[in-house]
Structures are given as C-alpha cells and as structure tokens.
Length: 159
Image 1 (cartoon, one colour):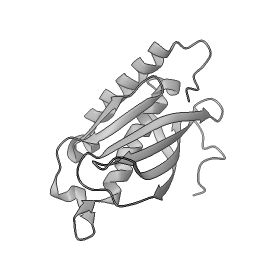
Image 2 (cartoon, helix red, strand yellow):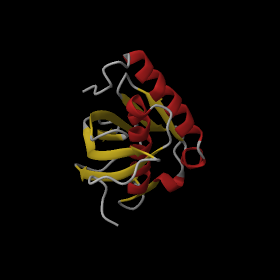
Image 3 (cartoon, one colour):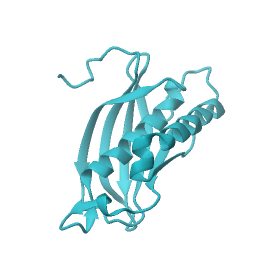
C-alpha cells in the first residue's frame, strides 16, 4: 500500500528508497554483517545477506539464522522503505513487533518491508516479512520508523 504525499511522484519515492538503501548498505553494521539493501518498488525495500558467516547462525545448534541478524535485516529494510516518505533524512526504528512463524534456514534469506501508513509528519508505519529458500513468510513484523529529528511519538515504546 503506497502512502506517499499527494504531490510526490512514485519515481521520487523509489529514488529516495534507492539512495537510502545504498547509504544503509554502506554503514559499518551492514558491512560487518554482509547485509545488502535494495529498493523493491515505490514503497518497499528488501535486505539480504550477501555472504553467510559463522556468526549469522545461532539457533537450533547453529543450523538456523540468529534472531539478531534477522532483526538487523528487518531494521535495514524498514528504514530504507521509510525513505519513500522521509526522503534522505536520517531515520531510526523506534518500534518493532515480531511474530515468529517458523525457523529461518541460512539459504535465500530475504527481509521485505513496505509502507503501511503514516502517523503524522516524520513517522512511518511499516510491515515486514522474512522468508528463506522455502518461500513463504517465516517472520512477520510491524515497525515504526521516525526521522531522527522527530520527538518520540505515542507509538514509541516507553523507556
């Protein structure tokens, strides 16, 4: 569901996501964890692991992808997708609610995030899924991304 300002052409939104994806892919955490982020249309982004490392595994005696890596994939995809609304403003993930539907195998892992709506200026609501080589969602998540200069919202978790 695309929720863009009425005067923003979809090409501008996709370009914003592509720029954010490139920036997020070049940050130290993404480089260390071998995470690549890409645009996936005018209101969505995907994050993938480019080369599997031993530290990516951690569940079920190291046969599955570590939950922290999966969260990093979702965070990267959500922040990139939010750039369709936020533009190139620095952003932060302020809320992440996850539902684990099954184990995630270390093959073909993809996190895909898309915009679900907005909650005021500078706050974007997103949905994400993680799938693996078997297809189908293995994790579903909802998240809130805000521009860094935004004050916390009522959607932000209490500290």
